[in-house]
Length: 555
Ligand SMILES: *[C@@H]1O[C@H](CO)[C@@H](O)[C@H](O)[C@H]1NC(C)=O
Ligand SMILES: *[C@@H]1O[C@H](CO)[C@@H](O)[C@H](O)[C@H]1NC(C)=O
Ligand SMILES: *[C@@H]1O[C@H](CO)[C@@H](O)[C@H](O)[C@H]1NC(C)=O
Ligand SMILES: *[C@@H]1O[C@H](CO)[C@@H](O)[C@H](O)[C@H]1NC(C)=O
Ligand SMILES: *[C@@H]1O[C@H](CO)[C@@H](O)[C@H](O)[C@H]1NC(C)=O
Image (tube, rainbow, N blue to C red):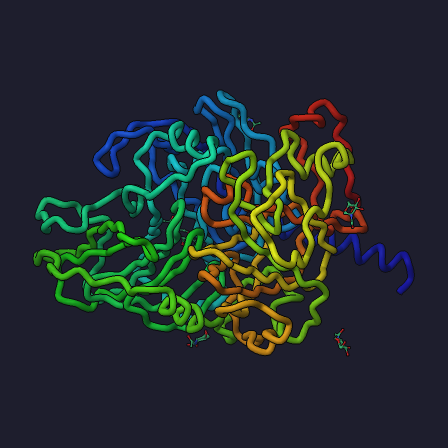
């Protein structure tokens, strides 16, 4: 092709891209974030509300829609929100984590702008600063398929978002003090379902308002996310089974389950058909793998139904072997069409050569006598200057060191160092991450900016020979994976999203005390095709506060 014609097609491409983007609808939101006194478990406590709601309002849209959220911080502390599961293609500027963004000072506002590019599915947002999420501030995000893209099930009558999670009644400053002084949060006091805690053992109350309603004979989509602090949650309905249809953005093979384990940070969408005697039924959410389960219930009412909920409460499964089997039964529906953010990695991911294997080993220990958690011996701390900004302004060497951890750490003891933990990744590499859990509790891991193929979870220690056990055909592409005690899990992904991305423990306590790191993924060509420039209105802080804003990336 002659240089002029290739330039022409490039321009045409840019033009088309520009038009396509302009046509994608915008959804504008204004959020007033403040404290309110609420008593979800009977004890009055200060809870973070958004526009006076807890959970916060739903962010809803269709693939490729643009979301604009103008956040007013009325708290007395700096604040950030992160959009858990939204991939922010080329745009870690909007990630809203302490490693990517300067916090919103109290009494001011900041506007997040992002596109839910090539995604569908069930996600959520939460405040990512300090321990704010222990005080609420979370809410659902739902992304629907575009009209022309078929969804592999009949359109449900309606849908319900269900945020479940364990919950503490201690005031936020007390919880923060516990962690800062090197202790653990201890056990949660209860479980909330959409911000409410319904006592599971009390008798049906005819005056109880239903949280969800269904028309007899109709099918509903329930989107569950575990937004809790510490525990896996099992969800189940009285007398109704659930048909799994989506896991964190992937249409799945539609298995039927009586109950579903939703591990920390995970989201699942199921279909429930109102096919029982019209009346009341409970949805139960209870903690898993704890000595004594804490639980909650929410009322589901058939429209016009009069019968009280059945007395019998279905039991949760026991032990993690059941849960591992449930993981193995979850498969990607290969024939369903869908928005796919990773075209290179999507089809036939099992045939791509692995260029790098990173082993992530979690550990608990103490630094100066205080409890800390680490990855491969490094316990992450957030510097005052966000990592992404330090890198963009070319002052990374003043803020952090790259690659403190080894890809294969060998035996990891209790000793650890505290430092900002940033790992270089090569743009477009196809990598494998192995999570080894040598501890006694179930762990989960979330990666921002990506979804990965969850190819295996197995008991024992990982060796390269275990690759022959991977599901290289229809593993679910998702963003959070659980690892049972004494087990390992393997995921695969293409690092094709340039930016600064966070890998973190799903347990808030662990992430807060250092069990997280950032992947720095840079496009070598400094091209706008691969990453957006620093937005003009991006807050600056730390050592880059007064530096001139340059445009690093060009066409
Ligand atoms: C969410 O968005 C979808 C697609 O844009 C729309 O069909 C649906 O009505 C919206 N739901 C709510 C509750 O706003
Ligand atoms: C703050 O809110 C005002 C009023 O809505 C808006 O005009 C302004 O752009 C916002 N500022 C930022 C930095 O988002
Ligand atoms: C997978 O999706 C296809 C196409 O939409 C659908 O017909 C099929 O029923 C789905 N398969 C399973 C096992 O859920
Ligand atoms: C993958 O690796 C194998 C063995 O090293 C090699 O023969 C093959 O050409 C590679 N495939 C690709 C697509 O690079
Ligand atoms: C990591 O990436 C940074 C930024 O591109 C670069 O300066 C550094 O040399 C890289 N380090 C290694 C070990 O690749």
